[in-house]
Every structure is written in C-alpha cells, then in structure tokens.
Image (tube, rainbow over all chains, first blue to last red; front, side):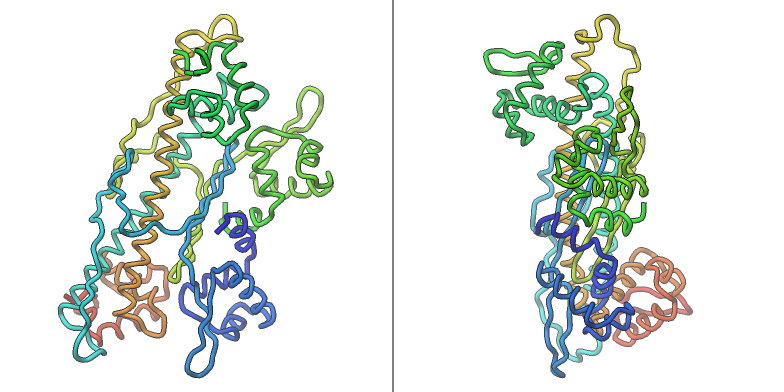
Amino acid sequence: MDSAVLLDILGNENRRRILRLLSHKPCYVTEISDYLGVSPKAVIDHLRKLEEVGLVESRTDDQRRKYFNISRNLRLEVDVSPYEFDMKSAYPASPSLDVSTCQYLSLNVQYGTQPDEREGDGDPETVSDVEAGEIATLAEELNCLEDLKSELSLAQRWVHGRITNVLDQLSEEVDENGQNRIRAEILAALAAGAETVRDVGREIDAPEHIVERHLASMAERGIVEENSGHWMLSG
Amino acid sequence: MDSAVLLDILGNENRRRILRLLSHKPCYVTEISDYLGVSPKAVIDHLRKLEEVGLVESRTDDQRRKYFNISRNLRLEVDVSPYEFDMKSAYPASPSLDVSTCQYLSLNVQYGTQPDEREGDGDPETVSDVEAGEIATLAEELNCLEDLKSELSLAQRWVHGRITNVLDQLSEEVDENGQNRIRAEILAALAAGAETVRDVGREIDAPEHIVERHLASMAERGIVEENSGHWMLSG
C-alpha cells in the first residue's frame, strides 16, 4: 500500500479508534458506533474508506450480522529530520525469510519454528498436556519476539540519531546554500561504489545534470576527484 | 510528540510535500507556494500548524527574509495486523547509547566514532588532505548506517510477520469470541515472569478484573494454573 494513502487514512482520530477497537475483536457497526459515540452513518463512512484501501474486511455471521475486522498486516515508518522526510510502508516479511544473511545485523533468536499441524483430539473444551506445552512455548516465543521488536525499534532510533549526526558533520564541510542532504547522499553513493554520474544519479534517484553540478563543485574544493568519467572520494 | 498529533499533521498531502521540500533545503513562503502550486495563505496556514507542534521553525536572514526548516528529529512507527494497531513515535536515541547491551540483537558496526573538533585552517574554499580523508570516512559511515537502517527495517518486518504467525497459532487454542489478542498478551506476560493478576494487568495495561476473568476461563481449559494467587503456564 502506498504510504501517502495510508497516512491519509490514519490522519483521522475516529478511523484510528476504529482500528484499535477492531484489533481487539471483530465488531459490527452498532457496537463501533456506541463505543465511539459517533453516528452509525459516520462509522459506515469510515469503514467504507478503510475497506476501499483494503485495511478492513467484513463477514456475515449465522444471524446475518455483519462483522468487520482488520484484514491486512502492514507496517509504516516515517523518519523526520532536518535532512530527511522519509516514509515507507511495507507488508511483513515472510517468517521464512533468512534474516541471518544481514551484513550489519545479527538476531539472537531461533529462526523458523514451524507450527505443529497435528489436530487436537478429545474434548475441545480442555487442552491436553502436549497442547498446553505448545501453548507455553508459543507464549515464550511471543514474549521474546516482542522484546526483539523493542530492541529493533531502539536500534533504529539509534541509527536515525547517528545518521543525523554524520550528516551534521558532513554538512559543515560540503554544504552549499543548505543543499547538504543531496551532497551527503552523493558522497555516500561514491563510498558505496558508484563511479559514474549515471550510477550516482540512479542510486540517489536524482537527475544527472544536478548530480554533475554538485560533483563539479565538490571537485573544485578537493572533496572528490574525477578520472575519465569515473568519480571517487578524495583522501 | 504524541503519535496521534503527528498522524493528524502527516494526514495532509500538502504538509507532507512541504516537509519533503524542507528536508532538501530551508525555504521561504513564496518558494514553497510556487513549488506546491498552492496559495501563500494556505502555505502559511500549514507552516503555522507545523510550527505549533514543533516540527518546523523559522529564522530570518540578513535580507530579512524568513526561512523555514525542519527543527525536529523523530521517528514514527505504526503496526497494523488483525491483532494489533500500535503506533509509536520517538526521538532518535542518543548516538552514545550502548546498543551492544541488547539481548536479542547484535549490530556489526563501529560504535561511537567521535567528531574531530579540530578547526579547518587556511583556505576555506578548498579542503586539506586530512579534511578530505575525514569526509571520505564520514561518507562511508553514512553508507553503512543507511544499509543498517534497511536491514533493521527488514528485520522488523520479519518480526511483525512472526508475531502475527504466533498469534494465529495461539488464537486457535485460546480464542474466545475473538478476544485472542488479550489472551495471547496475558500468556506472554506469564512467560515473561509475571505471576499475580496485578503484575499481569500492569504488564499488559489492562484492568485487573478483566485479566482475572480470562485467567479463570483459561484455567478451566487447562491452559494456565493457579497456586495461592500465583499464576503460571501449564505444560
């Protein structure tokens, strides 16, 4: 889903309250309307918008009552700094994704426990010892994953702070009329191995003539060097 | 900053475009208005809202022209799933934070390079070899941090997928009328070491009488056990 569409949807307090309610349990319109203190008509209108973007879906139960529930897993991240306004939304990565191939990151968790497909037997109202053991294992895994989620969040906040810090330092050296972000990105692209104006432009998603102008100006100051169309960092 | 306030602010396309523009360079009202194709009056209105929440600030230059720039570093995360609607905003963590104490996470990066405080000497228009070397080092660090940021994002999407997966499995066992999220949270709290109704209620931020009701009902089914006021997972 497009981040802009998602932000438009989430920019309304009542839609956020509806989503929070539905994340606890599926609800029908009157329930939502009573809980929010908002007219059923307004609730229906919000639900329609949430359905249109695919965040919510409905099903009708045996008593022909229509229940709404959240139908989608997704994650939105927005970073704001003097150098950056970045928004990104993404579906969850597959649980079978191999996170252990990350270059800068190791997770100290067990990967890819598979659900046990065995059916429960006997009385559905009570669980067997094996099932109780499975539930305890899942509860421990959930607890560990939630801790990991907090740690990843903290690490991301740390990276965000460090990036701003590095950009502050870089901009002291390479700034020209506040165009520091693009210059820092150009230098980072060179550090990552981009060599030609075209490579750099593709890497940072900027027009080639703008990249060229900044490279030329930074070359005059001895920050970068060119050798027959191949650019590199000086020093 | 409150996540709800931030989402209200970001739920407007023109305010997002203003932030994106200001992340490239500080701008004055006419510039923004020309770029967006929106009246100066509307731009001033958006800027006022952005200033009120502290996202944007202005300064006046020598020609008495008022420039606006982004004044804050922050990060917003929203997770949506059938079990969850979680939004969180946070300032960047301090670069000196010790991320190496994380339990489930290791980062393979250098920690805490300090900026060199030495003043540049001689011609301010060109950089010395030492300065060029420092710029190259910073550019490499920026490049590495941006890769790490992508990896952390990917890891978080993976965790998000795994949590939903575990909750899917748990809810098959412990669900009662769609109240699966709170039951899963109660079980995770027990797995994390909470023992009393009060501990669990505090951990998951729920009223004690509700926690008590779910615990009693799960005890009947043999999922949890009580021993003189101390609860634990069965199995």
